[in-house]
Amino acid sequence: MSRRFVPAGIELLRQRDYRLLWLAHTGSVIGDGFSNVAMTWVTFSTLGLGAPGLAALGVVMTLPNLVLGIVSGTLVDRLDRRVVMVLADLVRAVVTGGLALAVGFGVASLPLILFAGLVLTTANIFFSPARQAVLPAYVSGDRLVAANSLLSISPQVSSLVVPAVAALLFAIIGPVWLLAVDALSFVWSAVLIARLTPGPAVPAVAKRRPLVAEAAEGVRFIATHRQTRFVILVAAGNQLFASGPWRVMVPFWVTAVLGGTVVDYGLLLTSLSAGLLVGFTVMASMRRMLPLVRLIVLGVFFDGLTFGLFAFAPTLAIAMLAFFALGVANAVLNAANSARLQLTVPSDMRGRVFASYTTLMNLTAPISLSITGATATALGPVTLIAASGIGLMGVGALGFVASFRQRAESAPAAA
Image (tube, rainbow, N blue to C red; front, side, top):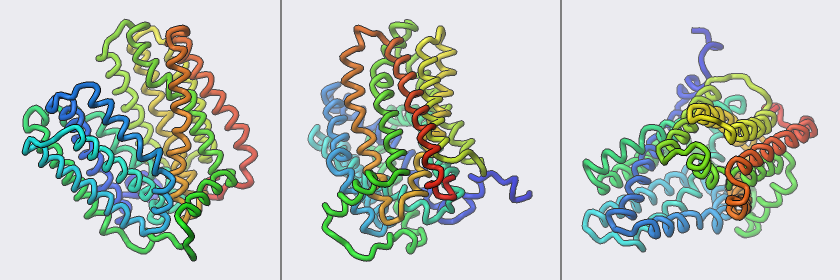
């Protein structure tokens, strides 16, 4: 077969280091799916802690990113990123394995569950920016969109298949073995990552300064670097208009407009996952595409257009089609966002920038949730979802105009 007909994703998997990263990531994602089901039902049912226990677990698991997000990225930039990922995996393996033993011996409790959730989330905020920062060391710039897309396929397949399998296994073999499988998945990931070529994973930095000073440098870089600032502002605008309506109003819409139940809501989420899977698969197969900055703003615009049209869907089938299209648009947006940052941010700053990106992007989510909660009853789901769609289209349109001003500054690979 001629080289030009080989899909970009297949070509990437032929590269040893990328294949190791992908296999490690896929194994860990599947294990996480098992762990999420196990921890949720151990908290809710096995320990009998109900909804308050799940709420407490949810709150605890949001704290590390808000408190340590920027600092974690600074440490990632100081160390061998391969070592950071291996250590994060081993910590998660020990904690998950310890929780399995605690459940097995009947000594699990809410404080122990909360501690496990806190440590697992903390380890993840070191692992994630390290993986994002190290990817350009093993993949050429013109393959980064495909590489990010291929890595994103695993969570989407997992979201479609793993929860049902995990629930079945929970009933058959119980939470102890589910948690044990998750612990083994982290060991699997650590072993594969340890086999990566060592050199490229180490950021080249001439001189170290105090940790706080380096963390502040990352924030200053974002504030002064137009390409990075653009990506974060678009992402923050996306969260501002989408977070509240998405989390609060979609379930409300299902019951108030469609007259549906949790089954209908689950079908919508399945349609979204299917759209994400298709979108990431297409992006992983493409060798040429639009400039990344245009993909980002077009992704936000079509997010808004699709979400706004969803508000007026007359049937469940049409609503599912809208969510499928929403998933495709989000796949394009997410893959382009990651590649844009990887291409335009210097290697020694990537850990800080990716950690800060996640933290700063999510700062607008509480605002969106508060506004949605305060106006939900008065305005209703159709009005708020439609307004969310218009707001997202506005962010996309403004971003598209601003993208023309960045053309001269864009890296050749990104342009």
